[in-house]
Length: 250
Figure 1 (cartoon, rainbow, N blue to C red):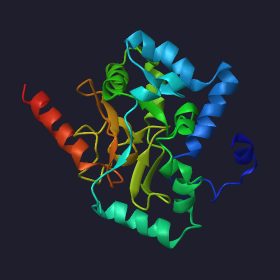
Figure 2: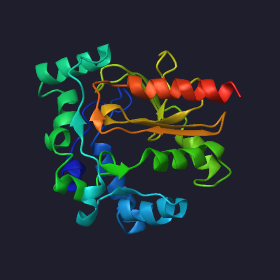
Figure 3: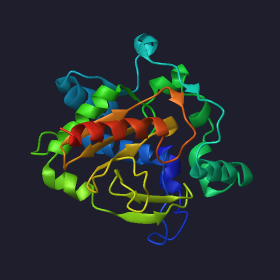
Figure 4: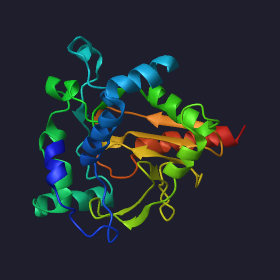
């Protein structure tokens, strides 16, 4: 995959558009990490970040631990929000377009999450395995700052807005820093609560994790029952709303 990407030309003139990279970002970032650190990201992350927190979050699961992983299932047959409906129409109606290529090349990304081959490999953009508690702890440290996980200046650089507006892949508005998704300023369902400084990422099927530096909150919701939503799953949205009602009511 890395060799293929090294030979690939940009799909549009840099700076003219932006589009979410649901899969390729993992190959790019994973290979860069490997060339700098000399080892794969999954084991480094577990040894240096997660183990000291008393948690487990892995890219690349040993066969003997596959029984600990929840099986991914499809959710109820609902159409989802307007963004999800538009995304589905684009993928089915334009199978050679940017959106279809981003999400279904290879097709196994959408069909093979329960297979041992998927669990064994390391793809930092798509097959992280862990708990909501593990993710919340990481984002909690990022929300507090003080260099507990990353240098504060590095975090501030990472959450500076890089692109904002119509996403060429998602076909809706998106806003990104360097790797982190930022709250949608013009969207009531930003996913990251009321703070305009919050940062994190949504995940396939409804997962969501973010840091809120204003309130020093780390939040995560993960699910193995996939939902048909693009930006924010209603299940996560309800939990986020309850969290802030409880926090701000104290």
